[in-house]
Length: 358
Image (cartoon, rainbow, N blue to C red; front, side, top):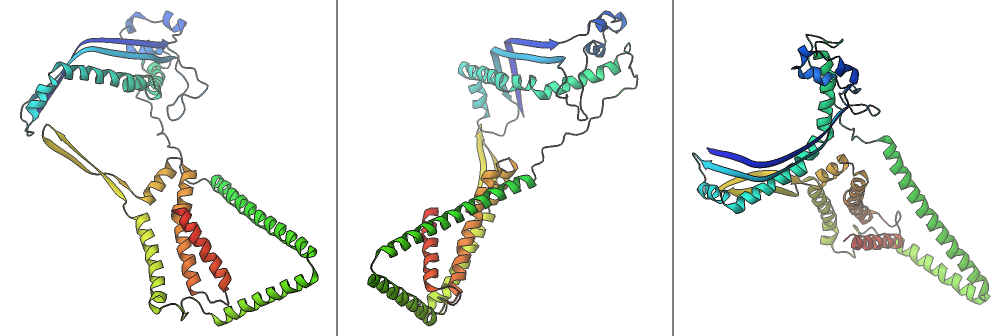
C-alpha cells in the first residue's frame, strides 16, 4: 500500500464567466428561495436544446465559462510507503522529496491546468452540461410557473456517432475518377497510334517504289515468321525448351507468392508491448496495440482517410495479386490464344512495372 498526498500551498485561480440574467426574474426573486441554487440558475434564460440535449446552432449562449487559468507556485508531493512490494519504493519517495522534484511537480501541474483542465472547462462538453442545468433549473424552482415538485432530470436521446459507412456518392465519385483516367489513357494511346501511323504513311509516300516493295516484303516475312513461330511453339508450361523442373515449379512459386501476400496482408505485422519499471517493480502490458495491413487500412478508412485507404487497397492489395495471376495465366496460355510476341511484351511490362514498385 502506498499513501500519496499532494499539498498545494500557493495557487492562483482566474475564472471569467458569462451570465445573462433576466432583469425581471431577478426583481421578482423571493427571499424564501435565496438558498435554492436552482432558483438562481432559473434567473438565466435557458437556451433551446435538441433531442440529444445539445444547444441548437441559432440559440444564444446565456451562461458559459469564458476563461479559466490556474497557476501553482508551490506544492509538495509526498509518497509514503506503507506496505510496498517494490524494492526501490523508498528511494522513489526520497527522490520526490527533493527541491528539484518538487519544481518538476509544479511544472507538471501547471501544464495539466493549461493544456487539459482549461480546454475541458471552457469546451463544449462542460458547456452542454451547463445548458442542461439551465433547462432543468426552472422546473425545480418553487416560484417559477413551470415548477414541478416531482421533477427529475430530463432524459435526452443518446448522441449518434457520425456514420463512417461507405457512401454511395463517394463510391460513384471514385468510379467516375477511375473511368475518366481510363478514358484519358485510352484516348492518349489512340492519339499516339494515330500520329505514328500518319507519320508512317507520310514517310511511305516520300520513299521510292522499290524501297516500298522491299519494306512490304520484309513485313510479309516477319508476319510469316511470327505465324510459323506461333504454330511451332507451345505454352511455356508445355515447352520442351524449358527444363521440366522449372515448368513444374513456376506455378508453385507463383501460388506461393500469392500465399505470402495473403499472409502478409491478413496476419499480424507488429505488436506494441509496454514494459516499465517503477521503483524496481516491472509493469508490463502485452499486446497494447497490433498492426496489420488489413487492420491499418480499415482504421484509416474509419478515421476518414478514404482516399489513402483506397490507394493502399489498389497498390498494396489488388495490384500484387493481379501481377501474379497474370503471370500464372500467361504461363499456361498457348500461342493460339496469346502470340509469342504479345506474350513477351506483357512479361516485359510486368517486369518493368515490378521494378518500379520496388
